[in-house]
Amino acid sequence: MAETLNPRQDLREWLAFVLVWGAAAVVTAVFCWLLGDIVWNGLSRLSWTFLTAPPESAGRRGGIGPILVSTFLILGVCLSVSLPIGVGTAVLLAEFTSDQSLFGRMTRRSLDVLAGVPSIVFGLFGNAFFCKTLGLGFSILSGGLTLACMVLPILIRSTEEGFRAVPANYRLSAAALGLSRSTTLIHLLLPAAVPGLLVGLVLGIGRAIAETAALIFTSGYVDRMPESLLDSGRALSIHIFDLSMNVSGGDANAYASALVLVIMLLLINGTAAWLADRGLHRRIVTV
Amino acid sequence: MYRYRDSSGLKVGHVFSAFLVLALFGAHDTATAQTTAPDPLSGKLVVTGSSTVAPLIAEIGKRFERLNPKVRVDVQTGGSSRGVTDVRQGLADIGMISRAMKDDEKDLHAFTVARDGVGIIVHKDNPIRTLSDEQVIAIYTGKITNWKEVGGKEAAITVVSKAEGRSTLEVFLHYFKLKNTDIKPHVVIGDNEQGVKTVAGNRNAIGYVSIGTAEYDESQGVPITLLSTGGVPASTESVRNGTFPISRPLHIVTRTAPAGLAKAFIEYAQSKAAHDLITQQYFVPLAN
Image (cartoon, rainbow over all chains, first blue to last red):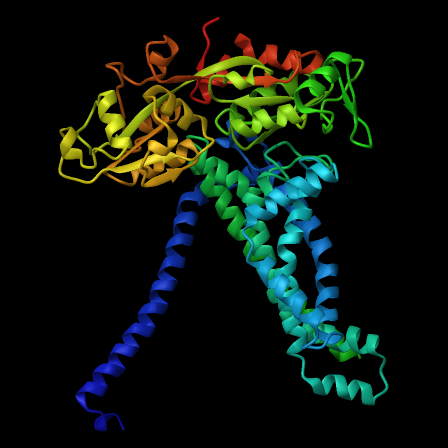
């Protein structure tokens, strides 16, 4: 039918083609430029010693060993608190609360508001509540708990969407077979809702691992190897921020640390996707 | 004047410090992080405050930890104002302040560790090499908006200033006798490196940052130039010999007269043993 298009339609087609591909190309180019810049400037510094050695001279020399450990600990605290609470709340919202009920609507609305709150507000809240009121001080625990508060809204909302995406047939069939609600939930709905949970998890980890504002007031600035969860520990993102914005001559190590952060994020996301994929097949098949 | 934290968060202190706390802040006070121990050189010191001083004190703290293996020095940042607040509330044993002490801070005991100069920077391609104080004031208050008016090329000036609460801002305002509300900035920045990067990325920008930072970045090929002030070239040397007019002391402060661990640490930070660390962070050690 292409021959029947008049020149004006032809031009419009062509314009749409250029705009769509152009937009895609710009997005990809920005991403490649960013990644290329980090890899180009960071790769030469990256080595096993860099990953394990403690920082020296305010981070200009030396490595990021203790900072990596602190970052993993903060993330660990954050996930071990937010996952159970997040999934529990999502189950309540999706399976046991009707769409129209006042409770459901209020909870969803407040979660959406919380998801949009700037991280510095969470940081100040964490500082006031976990550090001062609960007396945890500047510690990995305070930081992890603050991040958990920050990640929860995203995690709950996307897990809830995951549950809602499971076809109603599943529930009806399970009921027809005489399965209890808890069996249905654990063996059928939960595995089927994993993709939603995964989206929430990846977004949450992404937000948590890139966080500086909320952590500088909670887990703190100390770059010593942490000895317990009650020690202050500097997260990787704070280290990068400090090296690039506060320490003159810290740029080279800031790039290398940023590269480590990007690699870490890719690894975590990859592992999460692989685990979910594996879990999904095994669990649904064995029922 | 030792005090320690117990599980309820209340503190037991010396009669004098309790009186001081009562007189200044009422009975309500939170726990302090300093722990008493029979051996004065063990326990944990919490230091918070100026982000300019933080890397320096963190480095001094690490060396101090190596000399006294039972000691932990935890350094947190957030700005000079936070250092003052945290020390007053007892959340920190030592505060870091990168400016002269104010009149309403007489309740704190201050110790100078080093000096830092605040220098005005422009892009390297900018032909201007010196500005009079009046010209700087006119630029920062928005009366001069084009480089042509001060002998430069035809281009609009981008005024880079620091965020509220930053000591560099206060030192700058104090020297030029300005109020923060007088300043008409186009870009508001936080840390020194951010200031250097902003000016290096804009040929028509003017900013003010720590001289140590600017001098180091200039030597590393970052396209910025430090302008001389009052006829004195801006350099760590002129800050050291006291001729450079816009300079500031870097302080560490305590609420009560320091004793035990805090005293030992402050004395160490002021001693010659810390001079190489001060120079390493591009500050100027005091002559002693």
